[in-house]
Length: 329
Image 1 (tube, rainbow, N blue to C red):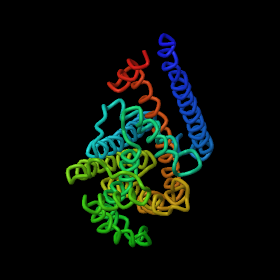
Image 2: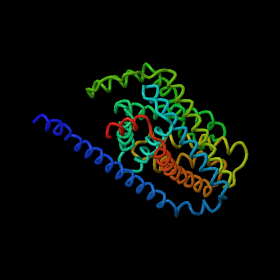
Image 3: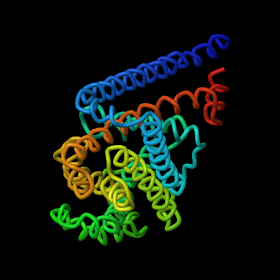
């Protein structure tokens, strides 16, 4: 009997393996579904943008895509800075995999897939779900505050009346800036966790974390501006005014698309705002082509980043993975 007892205690290892395998199956299904929707989004717009792409040279397309990849990388670094400030620092490859693969969830109908995916993948690295959720949702006010500042600085003078209808967004700049004060953020997060009957965050957000994330957000807006400026230049607009408008047009379009929540992923709303901001330097047809080409290149960038992050993470084993593998052995 005594000799048989250890064997009985080892039996739970099978359900553990089953749970691990089940999680892997769910993750693979999520990835396949997200990639399918992402590819469908790109293919569905190809007919609309084929004429615009024909007017862009390969170097301009490559430069625009490279700028998008830089912007997406800055977004990942912004999220990584917030997560580290909250108490979960991640290696670059681990952060890239969680962030970029999780972001593919935005192509699946429903707005919670990205955060659910990041929370699930973050568990492999010991990140509490509440911390993953807090870092995810904090990226949006950081993006909004910094993006509205970029739009406010770049659009009013060169764009003039073409964006006058969006002037009300300027009123939100001080609101979002004030909302990012650590005392406000920590108070809101603490209140939400109490309502959900969850334990409070182990480490509150600090001013250093907010400033670091805001810095990466501004880097991202600059890269997005370069991406759009290359497209606008290829379609016939040149000069400093076109470059400045490109920076503001993308920031305005993203912020407005996010705020108008009735439009999934900002569809339609972003295009109208970007079109209006580019009107002073492009004719109607060229502005439409710029808007559609920009959206498609950003979608391609999402898929490329997810693929690169997945490949890089397969070659780099994190410390937490090594410990988990050792336990299984």
